[in-house]
Amino acid sequence: MRKNNMLIVVLVLLPVLTMAQSAAYKVIFDITTADTAAQKAVIRQIRGISQARPEAQLEVAIYSEALPMVMKDKSIIADAIQELTASKKASFKVCGMTMKRNNVDKSQLVAGVDVVPDAIYEIISKQHEGWGYIKVAQ
Image (tube, rainbow, N blue to C red; front, top):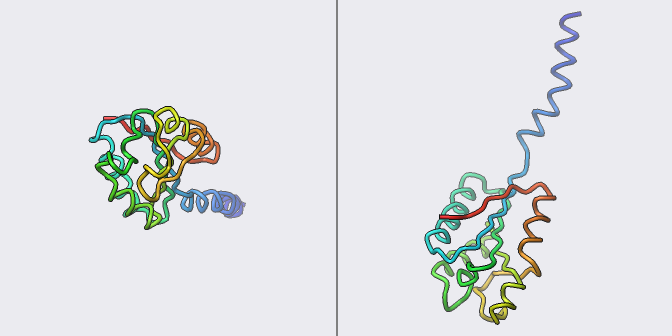
């Protein structure tokens, strides 16, 4: 009887443990600062995660004062953004409302950056889909 109970416990827990091991690694980073140290930090974090977890889905939502980080003529991390998007290690999504407020159009963006209507809505949508959330700040 005791062996049967143990077998039942193992059989019940096995699927739970298996699912815990194979949980998808999905993270959205929220950046709103013009602080270049914070912008470099998010690149460092993405590179570290993608090395440790190549299957990870990573996204950066850019809005407010962080807009220059994805503009061709102002970004200090343009090369890193292009490399990460080309290798599909991360996606970078800039807020269309922020662009409109700052009179910036898509032609001014670093190659590989996508525009979303509202970055906050993008973050909330990802969270509803089970993505982790990291606020980037220095």
